[in-house]
Length: 205
Picture 1 (cartoon, helix red, strand yellow):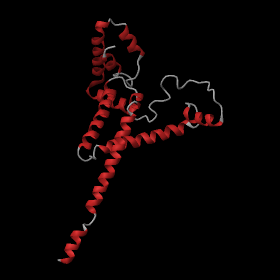
Picture 2 (cartoon, rainbow, N blue to C red):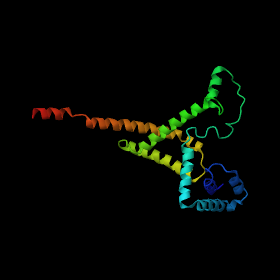
Picture 3 (cartoon, rainbow, N blue to C red):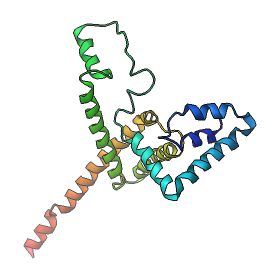
Picture 4 (cartoon, rainbow, N blue to C red):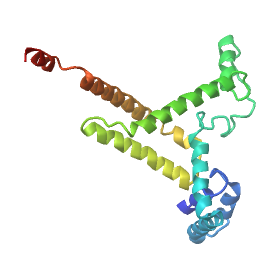
């Protein structure tokens, strides 16, 4: 599959898996698949117009980036009924939260959503906080990597679980942002604290 196939698939619906696009690409001779994907992408962008396409991209990102469960119950066979071998009380309690139709699942999804929004807020604020020296470059590189992921999801095939693969990177960025924020707060407090030497000199004079 040429990358233009995924570009075309990312320009319809919410940019997720599209069986019709798959069949169309597979039915196209291999030598023509690149052009087929590119032309399909350009046709869809042209149909949306200069204002519709940016709005479409934002909607795609909002759908994938705004899901704290990373679409956990809508990928693969997670919605199907399964026969679980363990039926002890602890296993039953775990299934209440971690199965799609469990009565504890709404609470778990809400907790995930709240935690993910807090993480995104810290990531956004971290752009305003710089660590000292070379640490600032490490944070900037990490944020640029995450931004590159968002650009990819906006343009190509879009799935919330692709973001899940980057959760370790996000965790490092958030940890660094919290540490930088704590250091910045300490520097601010130090600047506001009266200088005892200056106060003593003023008293003597």
